[in-house]
Image (cartoon, rainbow, N blue to C red; front, side, top):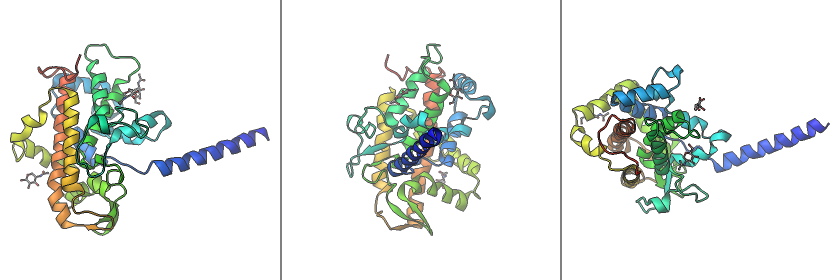
Length: 306
Ligand SMILES: *[C@@H]1O[C@H](CO)[C@@H](O)[C@H](O)[C@H]1NC(C)=O
Ligand SMILES: *[C@@H]1O[C@H](CO)[C@@H](O)[C@H](O)[C@H]1NC(C)=O
Ligand SMILES: *[C@@H]1O[C@H](CO)[C@@H](O)[C@H](O)[C@H]1NC(C)=O
């Protein structure tokens, strides 16, 4: 009797907990697994020997040294109790229509806790990883997790709609059609544009798409931009730059001429595709830059103020 009452109570609390989750945690996603995986693969190809070794050492054995295999791990765990605190770290909400980013104003969780946003998280995990090579890691921190979070959040901060307006949750509440099927503006930027490109131009082969992106920064349209993409004097100013670029693009390309109920098709796809491709490339190149610097492949100064 005693047992079944407490179980009943447990079950109702659990049901309540589920409802609260559903109401307050709409499915805010990140770059799709394709986007994250491309960012990680681009980055891993650009690692120097020290960073390559460190990444290999930090990854669990079952992925055979492939960072991209765990690129969406942070999305999978964000709803687990142990990792609930990481949920606000995937994005930034900026004031509606402001179209700019201000760290002091915008980087906080829904309760106002400072630093709990994607820009703060990248600094945090870069900082944690920077102790790895000197063997001064704080035992409270798990370096494997720091690497997985950093790799994922470098993708997220480059997805323009991850730095979006507050009231529409970065486009998540703007329901619309993508060609013939139902979607929302956030999801169009996370995934639809990538999948439509893969289907239309690469026979649905994401590896071919990724090779094309790589070709465009090694000796194609972006090859002259690489040095400026990599420029970074310290991690704080860099995350500020990445977030500002994203909200800028969100306004100029994401939200532009879009309202709930619209159908987006060829015009939108063709004009936005180059932006999505460039952001995936930039995320990968910059993730490699950070890893090369924290693990000692780069002669440049530390990214972290000491
Ligand atoms: C930094 O990471 C630690 C755990 O590794 C966490 O407790 C803290 O909340 C994080 N802060 C931010 C801003 O990500
Ligand atoms: C670090 O985190 C990974 C992934 O969550 C886990 O598998 C591993 O056991 C952790 N390592 C330590 C030393 O806690
Ligand atoms: C690479 O550049 C070419 C030439 O501008 C362009 O047609 C193509 O769409 C680009 N591919 C990607 C994936 O960015």
